[in-house]
Length: 170
Image (cartoon, rainbow, N blue to C red; front, side, top):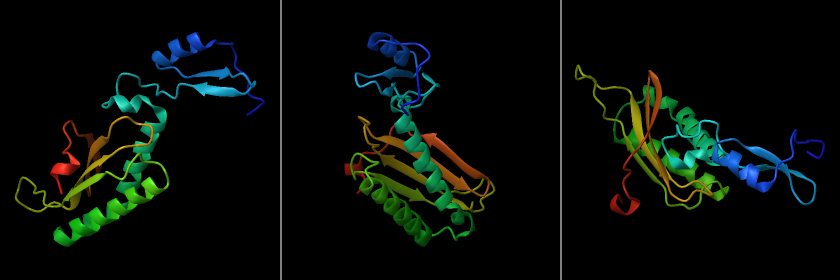
């Protein structure tokens, strides 16, 4: 917005120091427009992946995970069999292809592994699925990976320390 004005004038050196500390800065460029320098999260240092210090990457990953979670809620009512696994995997792959076509992902080299055979301690079959997702957001120098566990109790997401390589999984 042209009416937006920074409270303090910062030079590029001061703005870069703030960004390294995890604080975004608003600066005027040569044309007089205000621009955001940084795009970092305020949770600097607490991210499980280094890539999540970038606000656009973090927001995209949260959107992808939340969208997939919302789309697969039906699985807690489905029969835990091979058909459920194929339906979920196809649904998630189609979504990631659309995200790639929209320009949100850096490449179409994503991986989706699905499992619905989790057993409870008493031996009964749990309802829901577990997904391993690997994709590379736009402007991110490496792929990110998540394990998404969807059950009747809700959704639990964890980062995957050692994701499989796509070449070893097909």
